[in-house]
Length: 119
Image 1 (spheres, rainbow, N blue to C red):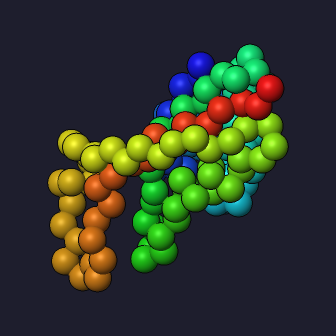
Image 2 (spheres, rainbow, N blue to C red; image 1 turned 60 degrees about the vertical axis):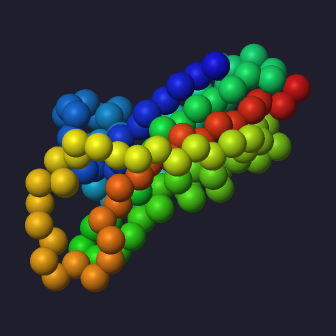
Image 3 (cartoon, helix red, strand yellow; image 1 turned 90 degrees about the vertical axis):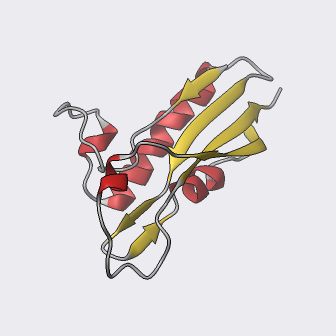
């Protein structure tokens, strides 16, 4: 089994290292780098092994980015989505912010996506 909890794009910058996904500002570049990371994880699994990805969504300047959707779209013949677990988020830094003009509900969940490697 491989368990991975990648950054949610660049919400929190974890380092200045070039390989750190949290340093990528352009969304499409982040998704490409995340896919490369997850492919490496899949390659390290034995046949029948499980990949667990804990990922959340992002709202930026009124735009909603469903990171879980992009991760689910990455599954192909090498790995199958076998379960989606919805996890409530607690004690987030965004909980302390007020969104007075916000039209939509705050993001209060994450996804644990479970994939199984074929073979």
